Length: 357
Ligand SMILES: NC(=O)c1ccc[n+]([C@@H]2O[C@H](COP(=O)([O-])OP(=O)(O)OC[C@H]3O[C@@H](n4cnc5c(N)ncnc54)[C@H](OP(=O)(O)O)[C@@H]3O)[C@@H](O)[C@H]2O)c1
Image (tube, protein in one colour):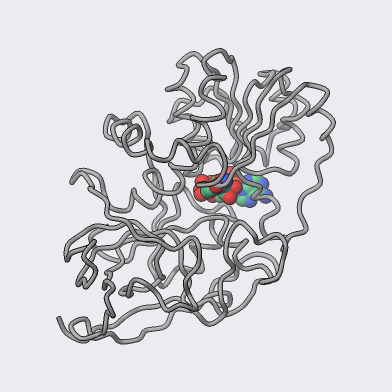
């Protein structure tokens, strides 16, 4: 293997608000000698695909911000890292061999060495070998069979599944994204008779919602969410991906004893920790609601993680859980990271790095 180009994306400037392509991160071409680069007992990875996730904006807050505790901040002038999939090219680690397909938390580089230098190590870093059925594209492991699917599966399985069996209505905000479509489809798997209401922000996304069998699709940018929920509620389970005004509209339309699964707050993500005001917090006690917040891998929902692939891989292969991708190149990482906050991604925002994706 020769000396080759090694495209790398660096985090270079903290954004004041939204991520700015060309300013927040920078694509640089370096070189790597694939045969001779020292592995020091580690592994040489060829990146296949990388995930663009909304929480990456949280990683761009002030390093000492109290709001960054659930994820490590990105270091200025170091490569961006996140969930992704890769192929092992060379290995000095007995746990891996050339040709292995791995899922992990890796650098935004065409080629990288695992483990990274100590100053770039943090508690989210890992790589693990995955047995991928040949019929499943590798990039799916950054979305429906990656973080997004795990997020939807574990929290709905632990906090929503039993409740769904006796519920009439579930509402999913951020419904057309990778997590949202998973939850809409999984709720119907748990109870085929449940009415799924979902919101999203464009006609193209409303079409996605209808295509996956959502009963009531709300364009929250054009419709009065509160009014539509009043018409089709009350809501037994609310899966909240967005917080802000949509959460308020849901709170006043919850059924007594309803359950809220607080998955994300994307409406406030770019605010550098300012948060979003909730007007109707009192509904939590007035309606005897239960609110479950979670991040993947922590708290009670983590108990469902070990069964994720066993349950979800067959559902995916049977077409009961579907996946859509909005593909970007490594050079377009800035656009990919910004897209999930602008709402311009149609499906899982994935950065395709090599032809194996
Ligand atoms: N708890 C966890 O461990 C965990 C793990 C993964 C993801 N999450 C959360 O799950 C949610 C969905 O993630 P995803 O990866 O599937 O992303 P996604 O839905 O594919 O992309 C994010 C979407 O959020 C919507 N959005 C952006 N700004 C908004 C605003 N101000 N108000 C309402 N909607 C807005 C946009 O869609 P529209 O066009 O519809 O506005 C955008 O496409 C995010 O909140 C994310 O942080 C949580």
